[in-house]
Amino acid sequence: MLKSAHSLTILVTLLIWGLVPQVVMSADKPPINIFWSDLGINQWQLEASLGNDFSKFHRVKKETIIVTERKGQILIPMPSDALLPGGEEEWQMLSSKIYDVLKSRMTDALASGIKEFEIRTEQNINTGGYFNPVRQGNVLKFIQSFCLALDRLKTELSSKYNVTVNGLWGSNGGYVASIIIPELGPGLVDGGILVDPRAWESDVKRLYNTLGENLAIINTAGDAPTRNRTFPVPVFRLNEKMVAYHDTAKALKKELPRLKVYWVDCAGLDIFITQHLGAMRSNSSLLVKEFIGEEYGTISKMTGGGLRNYILGSFKTSNKKNLKKALSYPSTVPKREREELGKLGDFPPGPPPPPPVIEPLPGDTAPYTPLGDGDGNNRGGVYMAPEPESAGKGGSEMRDQVLKSRPSNDSLSWPVQLPVQEK
Image (cartoon, rainbow, N blue to C red; front, top):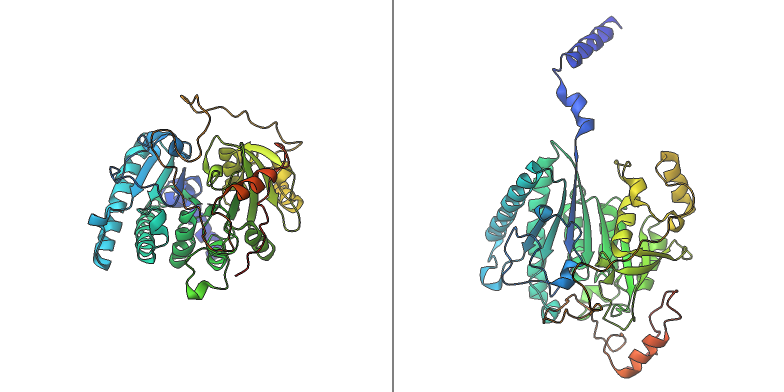
């Protein structure tokens, strides 16, 4: 007993004299928020270089930017075919190069007081390459090289900062994230949002567990439907489905209770393909409803950025002080989660605030053009599943069915149930 008391006295003395600063500093580390975004195919530009900011993005891509401060923007493009690593050693060299660029850019930004970053990976793959297993394999190796570099940097930064990494992965970005992150294991990414993801249900389950249940899926009206699977289908995937198909995402919600599943309707006509990745545009006007297990919650109006912040704010995290700001739409949160958050004192009381005013981006005078910006810039993203049983091939008959499926401007439209074609 005396020995314990003596030890306590020594510890208190050391604390008073500041000889064990790590004990008192660990809880007061300043936060760093890192967003890793990836929009899938048709995003790559030859002139892009490692470490660029996003100032050269065309108008449509600029709408998807999360962090507007240029010092906090870091572009990580996949190498061109001519510079693609040829073996494992060269892929490791690429990972080291990515690490050096990330560390240099973030060190300079931190010195300027920047604490929020967006790292945008861009895959060197187009629509045709999406169906090429060799090119998809190279994309996976690229994302793995990036993740190893990010993990190394996060580990170093964690000695001085509370580092949070959240992913926003669209289309083929969801596919690669769902495979690579579970392979690397917990700790790298703290939470993630899959938007119109071309990801297999078994991979999404592993991703959900790796992220400690901090995972959300957004399906969009006007996305090119992937009814059950994509093409070509590997033999070992014949009995699997993709979560780009909303019914698959809903079924996963029933199996994975803390998975968040949303159906969103962007402003405008929900013609197939035209709204692919629409929820990733920060200022897009959305009608949103959440599938909470057996039914949907109340429809809410918000922007793409508002939905993103709401989802990230509702993830399980040790940093709850920013939750009140992020949870702007409490009526859409299940009662059980409202009660849990209410115990923390962070959930905003009373009715939800009025919906945000949707303002156009500076310089925008013409209506949004879904497949380009008028200057020949392709919006990109993978958007088709050309199986006979799948929607997404086009034609006036299908367009008519899609247009007629929209009940009104104030309610969500649903994918047309096409007749099963005889094989």
